[in-house]
Length: 534
Image (cartoon, rainbow, N blue to C red; front, side, top):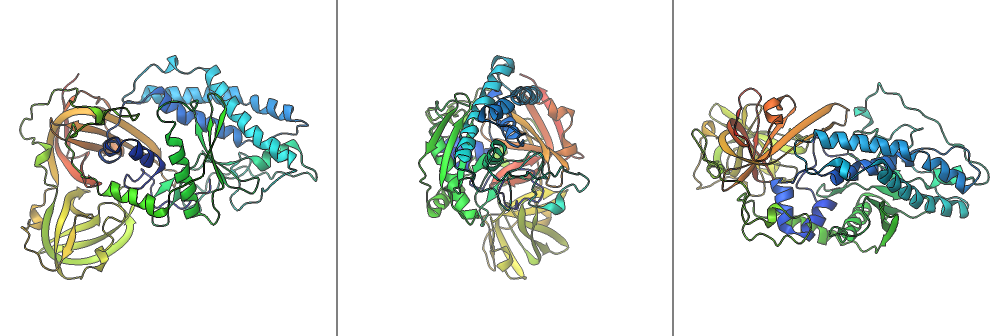
């Protein structure tokens, strides 16, 4: 995929504050759904369709990465490709079922929705759409095929945006396709093969806006005919409430391509695998100013974590759940000592000290590049850091002297106090604000609540090393907060948590995401108790 170097050094997650195609289409569909999904982080149970949407697309792209054998006709090429279908369909079903069965929270019976024949038919429909491109290429006598980043192929090494971080111990097959003097069907297949996400590459394969406030990942990019066409793969048939989002999604990709490449996008299409429909979408992306205005509107959204939200939506937009509820379907828990309501956690503090030791941008614990510095009051020294990339870019413009920091978010990382700065923070030479002593910063919380949702994610960093992250959301009757654990902090008790359980946490570490409190599990100090089960 024609991707850029990711700003995340570890690729542990996608920054919530960045504009993406999915966040954009959700925001345009229902702003309240966007807030709860992308700011609060509330989601629903995993469905078979969510899992297989990914697996079927991956299986289709895996077929496209094959190089064709010697064939003498279109029919022979089609027969060879269809011969790859059953194996890839079975692999997709096996992986999807395993993912679904291993999910902490799921809904539905996987076997009721997917079988080998259904998935095989989807793959054949996708192949038929690509064969239309191959036939056009053959009839045109060929096309463009020499690119700095070629379409990924099982017979060639993957392309890494950060080669120094790739596992140097892995060797890759490297066989060059030999083109004939006159075009053959295997030549046409090789020329028309699109860019796809390479499964051998653990790096994020996305386009990143130069200013890092927007990112996106294309499914397919065709360019054999001298035009850049971005294709989005859909498992459905083009109907349903979400179908109208295709235009906004693809036009966002088209705009982002123009922002990140020397060329511009010439066409956008949706390929639907259930019925083999090709939908050509009008190319009409918004301007950079318009997309930036949407992003700014997202950033300015009120960070109130009350639930249910004030004035719920009507639930008709598609994908609405938590945003449409006037009542939460659980009884509010009785909060017992030493726990306190989530509303009691201090969200902003003001401190005074000597600013020094500026550094960055360097990766934070999410692998995102942020600016940092130190502030000292007496013998107490505390790290200050942007709460997320670009949230306080003027940090290093402040004088290296005694200053007031107002509106800082108090937290902790690796058992050391930390102050996070964002757009609501300031570094001032003078202030009349009420101060908190540096040695009295709040870094932990004791909370109790009902679990509303839970999920676990596993992946690989850019260097191939594995990572794991688990999260769940606690509701105390009035407000909701995300609880997260990384790596070894994910223990058996955490893995047994399900929605409806009442959980009590003591000594959870304070952190912040998008200006919202995030409680982190410390494997040594945080105690977790499941008080009741649904």
